[in-house]
Length: 120
Image 1 (cartoon, one colour):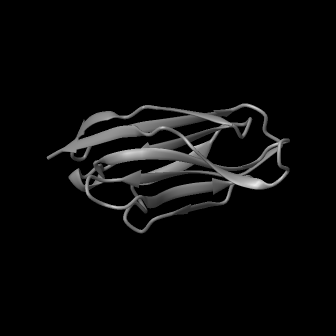
Image 2: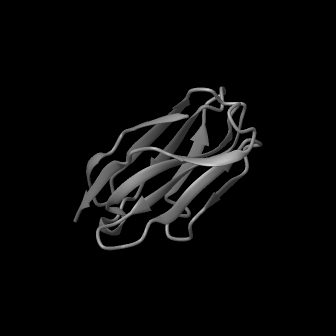
Image 3: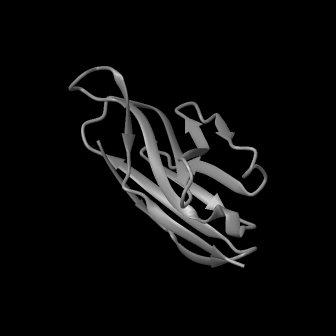
C-alpha cells in the first residue's frame, strides 16, 4: 500500500489548509483512513480518522476546526484545517488501516508526512 500525501505548507494563524492523502496498491479493504501529527520535540499524536462507514473521530484539540472526509472511492482522505493555530505546526502523517491480499490481515500503513507550518 502506498500513501501519497499533499497539501502541506505555510499558513498564517487563523488561516486554512487542506491536506489530501491517496492510497494505492493492492488493497482488499480499508477500515480507517486518518491523520496523525508530530510537532518538533513531541511524540506523534492522533488528529482525526474516518471509518469505511463514514464515522469520524478527532482529537479534542482540533474539534470544531478540522474536518476529515473522503472521496467516493474510499481511497482518498482529506483533512480540511481551519482556524489554524501556531500549535498546529507539525509534520502530518496519513495513516491507513487496510487489508491486503498478501496477508489478509488489517495492518497499519503510513505516508511519508507533509509539513504544516502556522505562523503567528
